[in-house]
Length: 275
Image 1: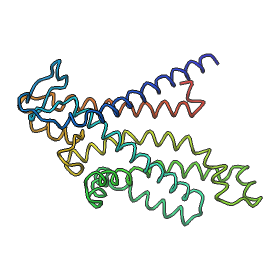
Image 2 (image 1 turned 60 degrees about the vertical axis):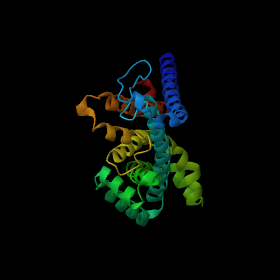
Image 3 (image 1 turned 90 degrees about the vertical axis):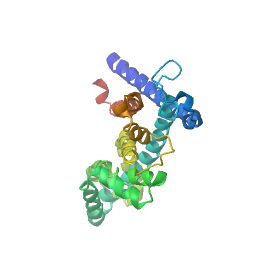
Image 4 (image 1 turned 90 degrees about the horizontal axis):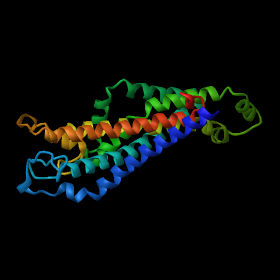
């Protein structure tokens, strides 16, 4: 019991620390957005130093400020797209598992269709169809990340339909909507929350990928994908800091989100907390 409590406390502490770090990056990026756009050609192409820990680029812009602003934008896009995608997964997974064979067949067909298309290509196609730009990125990532979570929720609901208490409630005349709200939704909530958090790193990476390829945000915006794409032209001239620090920062944010999802899953699963 003591080990269980210690594991739970350690997991909660790591979860809180990861969340605070991400919140700090988010707030710092918002506060430094104007500084990230400011140009000063008198300090162009400076290597990392005390005044500019991440160096400056070919326009004299502070790379630390640009990196934090880009990460903040990626986190905001990741939060929005992951939330939309998870809600879609919950609705479609619940419909497939609880509203008969026709609904199940329709949702399963759509899920197989989306999973059969290479993911980055699917994101690009949806983004282009929705007009590119910020909302094109949001639409592309949101509408392409729900199938895997929807399958998990569908499987859970199909199992729940055979549970004794669900069968009893159905025989007593309780409507499908009430059964879903009272009995099924609380059961799938842990899977939904864990799936929601685990979608953040995927959403951030795919947002960075399509902006890196030039299909997302405009070049004026300090997005991580834009920063990395622009830096590729200057790596051969020895300006390694333009790509190294933004890339490492992106990896760090993705790992923080993945860690939060893993620890949250342990907290929601009493058996997993012993690991």
